[in-house]
Image (tube, rainbow, N blue to C red):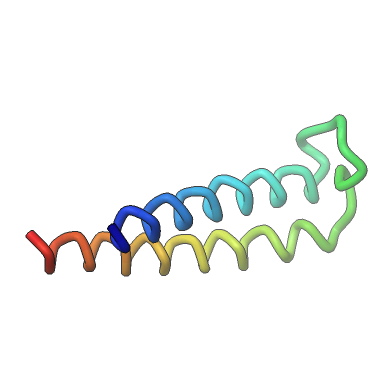
Length: 65
């Protein structure tokens, strides 16, 4: 079950990080975060954390199988 949790958490982090990056760059409107440069830096960091979490989630699923 830990593998599934890590996969879901990693996927959520990747999606949110990508959204924050796009909003920070000003390409997606409709939010207070649009055009704020801090989100253009925070977003990729969250994406990287999500990718690492996905990697460990996949690794945990393979070890159990």
